[in-house]
Image: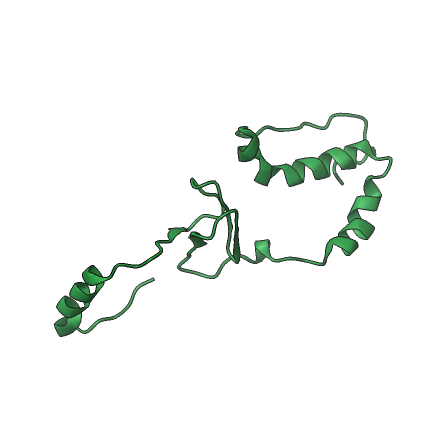
Length: 123
């Protein structure tokens, strides 16, 4: 992410870098999501690899922070799906994104059609 080096010391610094032989090399990406290595990269964590890191010049978006826990999700969200196929489909679609490349699918879409007041907008 950059460093300031005195002009007279740049040659010595580059020489130092060229002499290094690190035991591990990490890949970085500025985009969250699937990485070409097969890992799923988030700003605070990488799933599926110890050698890929998220790197950004700015603050990581707060979109990727955990809100609550599994018990809260089950009580507040999942119970609403019981007997509601539209909501069950909507949540299934929302959770499918990280799994698409694992099954070799690029993506898709779902269009909810039906009478008003059936929960399409809420879903």
